[in-house]
View (tube, each protein chain N blue to C red):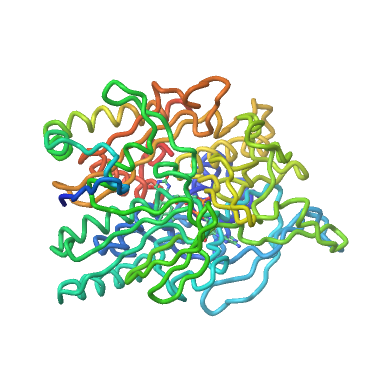
Length: 484
Length: 49
Ligand SMILES: Cc1cc2nc3c(=O)[nH]c(=O)nc-3n(C[C@H](O)[C@H](O)[C@H](O)COP(=O)(O)OP(=O)(O)OC[C@H]3O[C@@H](n4cnc5c(N)ncnc54)[C@H](O)[C@@H]3O)c2cc1C
């Protein structure tokens, strides 16, 4: 009997667990460790944040699903990895700390034969003074944060209904944030909601972000064919902001969030401030801060994890300038270079470098997006890694499956207003996710597969995907027919 | 929302959609066709892996 231990039950960890369990024989174990008792379809959090969905509609309890599928579940937080075991323990293990009510803090040693780290991001609000829902700004990163944002929005709307003018500031809360797409969705859902509630004329909406230009989204933007031109996403994004009356501040690193006033620095070195009555700023992400120890108890965290706390895998982490970046720098198997039974997928793996070009102000402050790892690639790499591990556990000598973001396409639907009759969303496809300027010298991507358009159809798809992915994550009949 | 575009301000330069383009974005018949097209495009991405 062998055991696969999966840390994290988000999009990546849960996908890996369900696929591994379905493929593995009864004689093997799949164990999932996650601090949250509920699974969250994170993309729908933006709808919780404007009050059109509740946290209960975007989450469900994990335990019954794991019980049904035969996965062993520990509601706990992984604390440290011991890939060589320790004194008196010959097998590798992970030390976990329970988060279950009544048992909170109790430690347990979970041994493994194969380990997948799918712990996603730590929401690093502390990187910016005053940032975060416990301080002076709102967030939509978790269903709970989003519910709090919805209350904040209701209060701002009430003030507008009393005739007050309000400034709403939405975007990224640090110079190295990722996930601009989520903040973009929230911005346009708020804008739509203000129109629906009849107070749009009382609102000044401002976008602030660390992108070099609008439409970058952390992936250097993209080129699409439209109206007889091959056009950068910047043009369409600026068009949407203009059409919806949203002002934008780009190339900005938020430095401090006071109640009602946000201070930021720009790429050209200016120190600026803006007043805001409602502020939703995403935090930068880092790894969750797992520690690693060798058999003697000596800390080896630095050899497994990058300074960002994301885990090294089979990427090329050599420091090189933007001009020398290559698609082949990106990992294919997500296996740790140091331990061949440890893998990291989803947001938890360390990208070799950003996708957007790094920019710094003369004082050294970085102002550029770090690379997004969205739902579709996270799910695909989790599935492929799970299949590779299953082969090894079953003793099959199969061909190793790969899932490089440089050879993978992605589809993404960004909501711009939730209504079955009047809503819109931007539907995007990109191929490959990591631009390849050797193969596609002018655009970095294949123009035949890279597309973007806005319309009601996108909203219908986003809405259907909500139900489809909730259904799939519950492992209901024929769940495997729904792609990652 | 109609935007007042002032010369030399940031919103002066981007292209804006014509009334027809905007109407098509929420026109049920047209959007049903786009629904099919977008689904095909997305499935092509899925098939690549
Ligand atoms: C508001 C928002 C909207 C988004 N919208 C979209 C979208 O429309 N489309 C899209 O493709 N992507 C979207 N994304 C990105 C998408 O959510 C991520 O790509 C995806 O969640 C990454 O999956 P993951 O499994 O790596 O991380 P997560 O889904 O964050 O999962 C991490 C898991 O690890 C657990 N964990 C944390 N610490 C530990 C620990 N110490 N031990 C064990 N477990 C731990 C967590 O509880 C969680 O279960 C959005 C993100 C946000 C924030």
